[in-house]
Image (cartoon, rainbow, N blue to C red):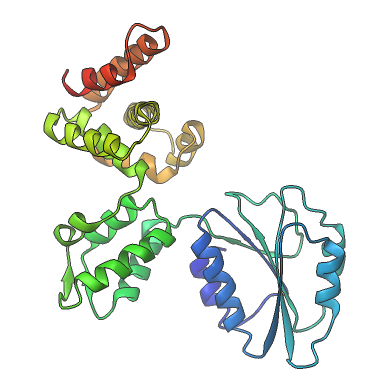
Length: 305
């Protein structure tokens, strides 16, 4: 299940074990808080990633003298020993709950009866209603909410930080639009590079120059910038040149399916320009690797072509 489904499921039932996995730390912490809140009279015990499984089991098997139940939260290491935990969960202590945390995009743990909860960045379809609820009674246009999701990479940690900031800026504004968010929004590096690639593809010299100046002024490594643009243009090329399923294409390119969706949305009407730019960037990449040009010169060549 995902984070939103967990929130709804806790209203009717609490499972004996949960496996929270993903890269959005805020969601994982929020999920722990939700489970704890669903157990009003509970004693909480937390363990780090070097705690032996036997210690975790001992805590779970112990009945609290002061509360009705016990919540054990344990972070997993890269190679967890899970046999004792799986054995315990065949006959868990009634009322006690185990939360295992795995800070990976996909769970590397095989907990046979634990309920997995996906705490990776959420899709816009899930995030937009959450954003609207968080800022109520203020309202936000769908375009502005989508823009916020894209610019933060879908990380609810970053979204929450931005919304807190906007609530202070726009306390008296009933409806938020893109024009209100854009001047104060702190965009992720990936999104800034996405904007740089989009400006290069559209041959918007002044916009691309401004974004590049902003990135370099922040001491962002020029190789990282160029590599990001290469990935961005490659994604745009394959998204517009192929009709393959976005999930399949996303796995091939090592990116989110939503990145393919956005690329098709933004560049689908002009595949020829994308193809020509991709050919140009591959040539410049070869020139950099063979010592014929510098990264700075290659970026200038892309922008001022």
